[in-house]
Image 1 (tube, rainbow, N blue to C red):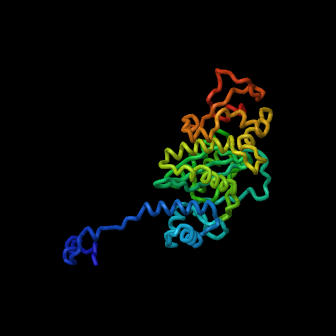
Image 2: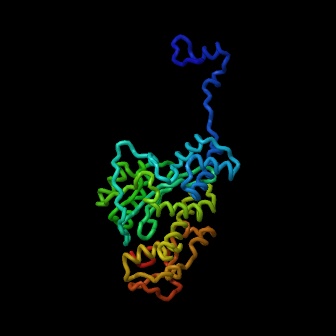
Image 3: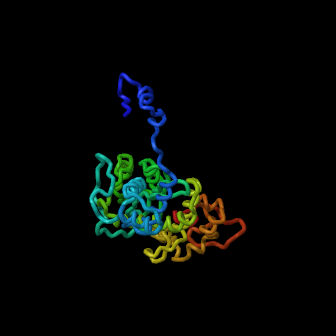
Length: 337
């Protein structure tokens, strides 16, 4: 055996005596990234369908559905790197930050009946053709309106704080902000931002998937209706696709839990009812189809902009004219902010 601490014989001399090439001594096996990426993608698809699958059932699904006998230790490692776990309650399912304060869950039996009463956030794994990244989003609980989002190649606290600050700058402060107990949300930078804005902090119980159920449903929609359909090559392509998708999700996707209203209707119309459109009118104001426009490569749509005619002070839609439409952010076009 080679003893690198040996003071009398160098590593080179020990290798010569043993007839061992030095390259063999220094060689370290390289993990097959392509195989890991493929497994990551399949695990993500299975987990999106069956979020209650743990390591054992995930390994069984990979073998039965895809013919991939996978080592359970490897599956556990990949799921941990992706930040996912089975949703059933059990101890130690969230990775708390050492020394971070954990706040109580404030939403139990609370009636959430208006925008900006409660916001929530979460992180999810997003696959790419040759890799992956992480997505964080901030959502209004009452309306399901996505207020802000960010992408990152690491599960750091930084991109979560950036998404939070953007939402606060654009929409003001909520009364309560709910998160899980992940270290990104229990860290000082994130909680300090909330407290400085007078926001009460609520955190899910460990392993309580349903405490933040609306964000989990958002992730399922994002992946099944956007990510899996397009198989994005790069983060920049993914960013453009998500910009168009979240515009579609907020402005044009009927939400069954909202009585088939759009999240934007529920959010803005509740805030300023005097300018509120009737359910279904929002779609008639959109002069281009966001989702089809993205598929056609419309640059204005991919940048999160959409063409609307101007609105009067009363919120009525004026006759169209050659001078219009103006290309503006959709929430300004609605005349509601």
